[in-house]
Amino acid sequence: MSRIPESSIQGLTYNALDSAITFQVMEGFWKEINGGGYDIQYGRTIELLDPLMYMMTRGIRIDHERLKVVAKETLELTAEKQAKLNSMAGRELNVASAPQMMNYFYYERDISPYKNSKGKPTCDDKALTRLARGTSSRKPIPEAKLCQEIRTLRKSYGTYLDMSFDDDGRFRTSCNPRGTVTGRISSGKTINDTGMNMQNLPELFKKFMVPDEGYLLIEMDKRQAEWVVVAYECGDANMIAVLEDGQDPHTHTAHLMFGVDKDLIKAEAKIVGHTTDPSEIESLRRKGCPEILNAGFVPRIFSMRQAGKKSNHALNYDETYKRFAFENEMSEKESKVIVDRYYKIYPGIRSNYETIQNQLRKNRTLSNCFGSKRVFLDKFGPDLFKAAYAYKPQSTVGELVNQALITVYQDHNVGVRDVELLAQVHDSILFQIPLSLPTTEILAGIKGVEDALNPQMEYWGREFTIPSDIKMGTCSWGTLPEYNLYDKQALGAAIDEFKRAG
Image (cartoon, rainbow, N blue to C red; front, side, top):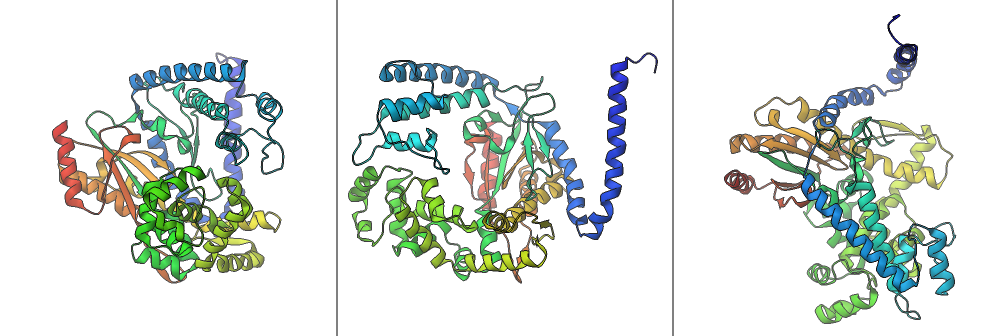
């Protein structure tokens, strides 16, 4: 010990005490874990460590040449747009400065300030979208659109394109198996300050993440997972019928909400796309599907299918019509129509709210279909209730995917043993498998992951599974083409084509 510097001795002592105290804390909690029925969650968390450690160590290959090109182009484009903005504003305008932005748009341009959910003036992205769009009494302001574009480019460069990587050039992240209250993992930078949060990677960056040489990259994703769980948890007959009849939930929801034929809803969705400008949408409708204007109520800022999709994603956890209006930049009057119709066609959702509140009043505890529990300790009120409404769907899906990671990692059967897990993001698993394997073994590996992601679940005596989708290729993660997971012959033919292409 005399050869060890004093500073190192202090560090070693601290680490030793930290380890010893952690063990003592575990002993103190152990009775509560076992006695409270949390041993299931504890055991699954411990099992999850191995696949997470594997993914954290393995990392993902990055196309650095492509990344450098895009980073350079992004800086050049940012400078070009900033120069254009400065010319239009008559001076240097810092898009990162809220005071400068509000002074320019609300004082110099004399526009009534847009406000955030707390009622304070803001120049956030939603406000800029409104400024750029214009109103019936004011022309669109192009500077606002430029500000949005510059902010997006700067964030893309600073957060993603100028990221630090490990010495071998691979992307890695640090995973926390208990990073969220719903059981989903969270992630962030590694201890070496490289990489970043894997859960929030934009499609832009996924285009630089590629399979290793000689590998097939595959992403398997659960289809509309939370909506499926909500349907069976609340037992709503209309929602369950959509799923068991194999309908597209977004189209069918729009059909029930607006009373319009489903084929017309699909046609309008193709014509309108993701356009949000009311004038442009009306023009597209008049040219491409004028009959849809005869419906009693037509959303002004998106297609009917998009209204169904946004409702399916937002309204299962008691989002108010005012919040829905704010999030979707629409009038509260229009929002109230959509929200009211959604709960009218799916009455089981609100009925389930009462069931959940009654359970909370008994013991403040909710359990999902896997047996995992959460105690809600906050003050009774809207915030606690909304968190409770979301717990079962979110924890069910999170646990489903986590358990699939464990199953695949521990599976040593033909094909599955060659699966290399790379990432778990929300409702999907990203993995790669050697193309040198026979096609039958690659298909066996895919089937193994599919089966792991497809457990039989049950709420209120009704069993269900959640369908999966698949993307695969030798290109980047962000450009993987979709395939029909359930057409194994077509999958095999595609794999053979990848093999021939080398």
